Length: 199
Figure 1 (cartoon, one colour):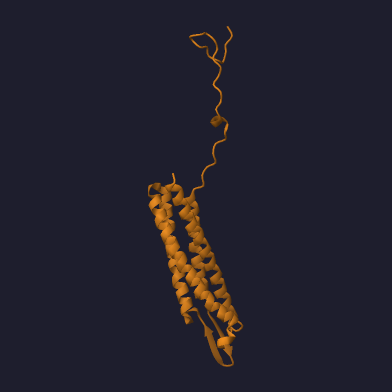
Figure 2: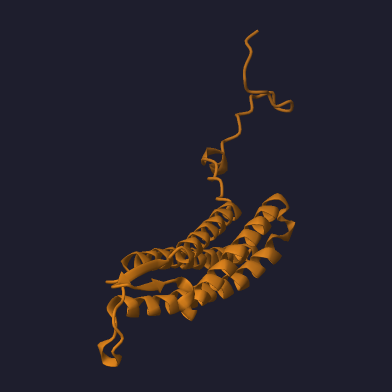
C-alpha cells in the first residue's frame, strides 16, 4: 500500500491538496527594532564625558609669563564668563550621570518609559540651553582674547598666553560637542515619545 503525504478527505475519499503558503509565510522576518534607550544611555554617557573633559581642561588653564621681572598670570577664575562656563558644564555633567542611571532603570523596568521620556525631553532642552549659553559666553570672551578689539583698544592676549588660550579652545570644543549631543538627545526623546503615543 503506497503512502501519501497528502491526507484523504474522509467524505469524498480524495486527497486534499496541501494548504498554499500565504504571503506572510514567504516574507522574511522583520528586522529587530533598535533599542532607543540603549542609544539614549550611550549619548548621555558621552555628554558626561564631554562635560567632564571640558571642566577639567579649563580649570587646568593656568599660565604665568614674565615681562621683565614682573610676572603676569592668566587663570580661569579671572573671568566671570569662565566661572559661569564651569558651573554650567558641571551641572550638565551631573545631570547626564543622573539621567544615564534613570535611563538604565527604564531599560530594566520599561513600564515607566513614557513618563521618563517626557521628563527627559523637557530637562534636556533646559540643559541644552544652559550649556549653549555658557559655551557662547565663554567663546565670546575667548574670541576677544584671541583677536582683540581695536575699536575699544582691547588687545589680544593669546600671543602672550598661548598655552592658556589652547586650554580654553580645547575646553570650548568639548563643550560644543556636548551641546551637539544634547541636541541629539532632545530629538531622540521626542521621537521615542512620538512613537509610543502614536501606537
